[in-house]
Image (cartoon, rainbow, N blue to C red; front, side, top):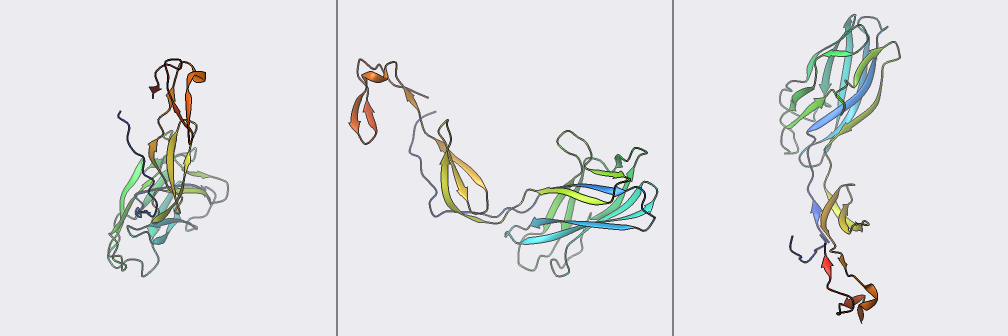
Length: 212
């Protein structure tokens, strides 16, 4: 590709990103009595970067069977939530068998702050395709969660790695690759003429510069 000027995004702001996916690693106590509840929470973001505490609740309804719900605090939305309740079933080894894959389009409409309706997927499997919700005789507990939204952030600086890739850093802990410093090589470094300000000029002794 052709060479061009690299521009640092000084003074720029990265827009917020609403949560589109979240995952939860948790165990439900197989020995719990019917009616036993358990809940944990995941912080999610709307399109304006406002945080919302999503509560994931489970209630045991029968052997190997738990009802679940995903809720937001009262006042966080004004519409009717959709796709946020259901039932999970496990086999005799405690592996989740239904539902599988993901729970799509969990939606909370009518956010009072003017953000877009909050809608996201609950991914039930890890990268290897194994369910992240289990049921064993261990105590019910949530051990990890992940979501892909973030609030807005301002440019704070940049880093350059060993291959010359320049990455902009933002106050919301996000990063953006903005370019790569072109690196030139010559057959004979000793043949270069130093012209000042860290600049060098090729000569017949150094050979032509190969940029890549």
